[in-house]
Length: 112
Image 1 (cartoon, rainbow, N blue to C red):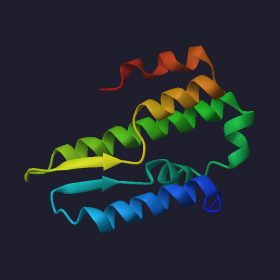
Image 2 (tube, rainbow, N blue to C red; image 1 turned 30 degrees about the vertical axis):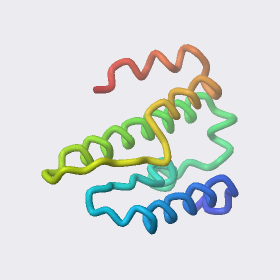
Image 3 (cartoon, rainbow, N blue to C red; image 1 turned 30 degrees about the horizontal axis):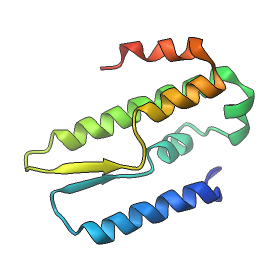
């Protein structure tokens, strides 16, 4: 896995683990590691994100779709609940702005 030694990612994992221990609520859904799952699923090396705007765009599209899918799944359960996530749909848009530019952001207009 390309991303498992990133200190920021270790912090996110620790926060998600802490939330799981503290919450203790069966009505709480914790969404963690969506981006990491996408990175590993599609085998994105770290260098692609900063050196290739096309690959950076592909990654962010995969991440925003995966985040949308997991949040929709969390909202579709029958019992009353709420969820928290270690990222939001705005994250891929912000990263697209940084690594692709303004033109990349327009690609997100069709998600629903």
